[in-house]
Figure 1 (tube, rainbow, N blue to C red):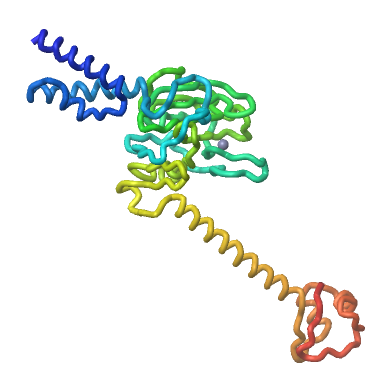
Figure 2: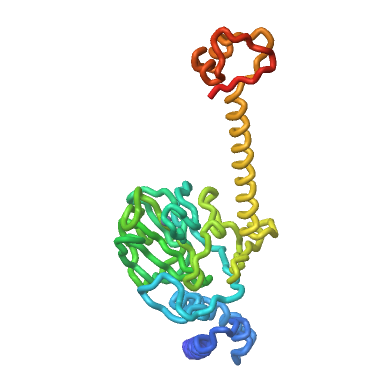
Length: 321
Ligand SMILES: [Zn+2]
């Protein structure tokens, strides 16, 4: 039995080496190729899966990333983004149980720069958790930016960034499980008021975290998210129930907001316009009209170049400002 175990181990280690050398090779194919009997194959696949799991956490998404460094958050120079990349969103953990978003992803005209993540209101000392299993890539401090921050690379291809922490609770190159505390909420770096700055990136390319996570609902948006280099990524799986891409949904929401804003503006404009004139009704005196609009008779007369003794005609238009 012992020998058998040793033999199995040798096969597994050998198989793992092959696996490491050819990252694109699927594990099922690998299991089929192993020269083992039916009974052994069953044991093999369980043990192999566990080993591959460990291996994956030691080298998360290694077929996607050209390198591992403990320094840079952003894009890897000269590395092309995949046209499509399916991101497994299952087995997640919300980084915080707080639900209030204080700043969304996107261009901020006031600062003339992109906000490449979202800000969630958290309080100093709040526990911040790893969103998925993964390996801590960066633990650092950036005075003018992220403050104390942590970057984790996950086997699903994503990298998550957690900024403005008051404390780190992990070290670089440490393997973490989804939900493991990685830091405490804070207000370090370029931050006014304690919050969590949370980013989701693929190969350094930022993705709107709200395409993936719904902090209000404390849930992910989908089981799988199809990243697309041209920006037309979309949600997949039973979580979504919708074939519409999130970019489309966002565009619709923006359009609706714009229309709402425009309607409001038009109404206000009409109200304002209506308020600035008065159409004289039968029997109305200057005194009554002035009182109705909260101005003095003298002002009303001055605005309309009439005297206090002028007789008003019904239907006459009087200026009020
Ligand atoms: Zn932010």
